[in-house]
Length: 525
Image 1 (cartoon, rainbow, N blue to C red):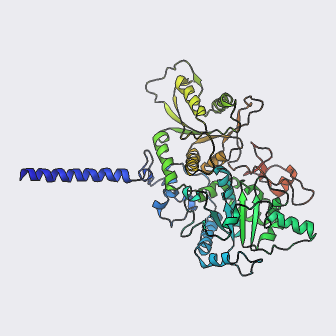
Image 2: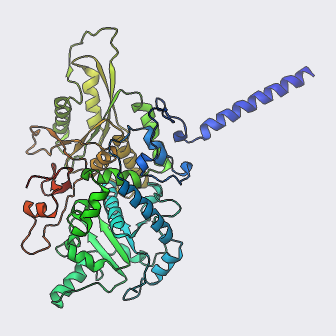
Image 3: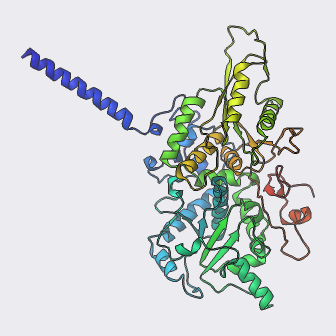
C-alpha cells in the first residue's frame, strides 16, 4: 500500500514537471514577456499598442505578434498621425475588404483583364506591386506604391512569389493583400519592362510621336508602370499632372520600382492638398506608413525579440551602426576609422584610451550597447576590440558591441537571408540613435521606422576618411535616388529651380546630390 502511494505521488509530480517543461519549450520565444519591458505599461503612461490610431483593433494578435508588441520595445513616437491620415486608412481598409481577392468585385475585374478597353462601370481599381532589387529597395517602393494607392483610391495587391508572405504580416483586417497565384497576368509580369507594348511610357511615346496628337485617356484594361532607376523620359511622365489623368480610368496598374518615389508625388498639384492634410509634418510619410504597413511575421519577430532580449534590453543606451560598403577591397581600415571618428566626434561613443581611469566605487558605469549591421564581421570585431583592449576616457561608460548576422554577400531571393535582413532593420529602428551609410536603402528603412534623423557616413573619396566623417540628416525621410531628369514641360529640365516650383518641401539629399527627399520646413526661395 505504501509503495503504491509512493508510485502515484511520483507519477503525479513527474507529470506536472513534464507539463511545465512542455509549456515552456512549446511557446514561441516572442510569446514570453521580454525582460525589462512592461507589457501593460502603467496607468500614467500606458503603452500605445495602436500607435496613435494608425493600427486597427480588429486583428488576431497571435497571428502577428509584432503588430501590437512592437510598442513594448521602442519609445513612444513623438510624431502623432493626423486625424486625416487615420480616417484615410480606415476608409481604405473598407475599400480593400470590398475589392480584395475572393470578392465578386475582384472576380469581375479579373474577367475584364483581357478586354481591349475597359468598361465605364468598374467599381474597383487595382495597383499590383512587383518586388524588385534588395529588401531595402522593396520596402521603400512598397510604401511608395501604397501611398499612391491611398491617393488614387486603388486597392494594392502584392506579388507573393518571392517569399513576401514569409516576411510581412497581412496589413489589412479581414482581407488579403496577396495577389492570387492564378492571376491572369502572372506568367507575363516577369517579362514586363520599359519596352513592353502596354507600358505607360511606350504607349505615351507612340501616341505623341507617331499619331502626333493629344490623348485623353488610355483605352486599355491594364497598364505597366516602369518606375525603375533606369526609366526613360516617357516613363518619367508618370509624375506629371496632365499624364496622370491619362491613367485615372485604367482598372489595373502593374508597377515595378526600386525607388522611394514619394517626393515626386508632392509635385503633382492634384495630390498636394490631400498630402498636406494627411502629413502636416512633411517628413513623417515613411515613418507613419512604414509602421502601418510593415509588420514582421512571427518567425522574423522571434529573431528580433531573441536578439534584443539577449543583448540590448539591459543597456542604458542603444546605438545602431549600419555599414554598407559598395566596394569592399581596401576599405576595411578606412571605414572603421571613419566610424570611430564619427561616433566619437558626435559624442555617440566615448573616446578610448590605453590607461585605466580611476572612478569612484559608488559610480555605476552605464552600459551602451552598439548594434552593428553589415554583411561582413570585420567592422564589429574591430570595433569590439577597440573598447575591449582600451577603456573609455571617462570610465563611466561600458561599451558592448554586437552583430546579429554575418551573411558576407547580399542574397536577394533567399528566404532566410531576407528574414535576417528584415530583423536587423527592425533592430536598428529600436536604437536611441543611428549611424547609417550613404545611399543605403537598408539604413533608410531603419531610420524611418525608428523616427530618427541619422548621422550619415559620407562616401570616402580617394581612399581617405572624409572630413567631417559624417553629418546629421535634417530629415528622417528616405532619399529618392532616381528622380525624373526631365520636367513636365520642355523648358523645365531637372534643375533646383524646377524642384522649388514642384514643391517647397522637396530638396536635394545630403548623401546623394542627384536625389531628392522631403523636409518638414520649406526651403527659402
